[in-house]
Length: 358
Image 1 (spheres, rainbow, N blue to C red):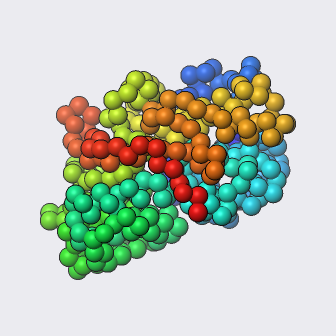
Image 2: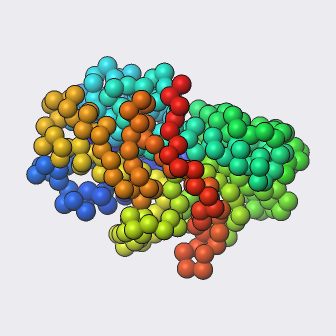
Image 3: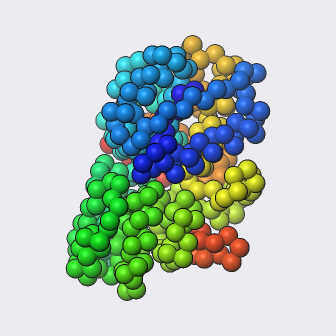
């Protein structure tokens, strides 16, 4: 299995979590499917589309992998899509949310185990308008995932959008953008920033007390444990976000997963680790179904599409219309838990959110 994930730059931590999740599940099943050993061959996508495509090409043409998994940044997955499709490579996207991959650029060979950018944000527009504020400033990384986050939020948000603040991906100094947020005088922000972008933004926002009178809402990636464990008391407690998982979900599957992850890695799991764990499970279940025979691609792809199980996030299944996972969306609040530290607690659940496919 060729695995294309960031090991450097803005999303390195996300790549590490997905890798940890994949390895945790594979260890659980003895590293095998259908009696054969599963070997993971890793390449660094960096969060650069050209690099991701070159690494994908290498895994397929030189390493002769049976399938590909990974991709964190939306442009990386989109940039590799045509190559994967033309070469008929069974692929599991373990993060990148680009909507187009479930829509105009859907491929028979590509399934997504994570989310589309539409899924966690679409229910949040109505929730923020009804429960938090009718005066919001949007703050998002200025690339595909950020603009798609904003667009899907707007579809259901009935309040006023005062400004759109768009720092580039991999921004180090947010002072200009923090000034723009202040100048727009919002009651709340709705944000999409992840990885080191979220770490830098929330750290710098706290230094100037940006959120003394501004509420924080957004897509949940930027307040996951990879960020909150890095920034500690600079975490925006009270932030209300939408995501397909929460650390505190009270199910057997989630408790078993979070406890195994903590024992194995000595830190709290995050949503990216869940996606890695579920991706590995899809690989193993599908390989078991076809008894390890990946050369019959149609049978193998059907086996992938048919995978269903109880995941730490809830029920896991693919939507046959889009090859995208159907997710519960949890609307969560960031709290400081006496024993766990900064984690998200579920306020309400939107069941079975499927990307519309167009």
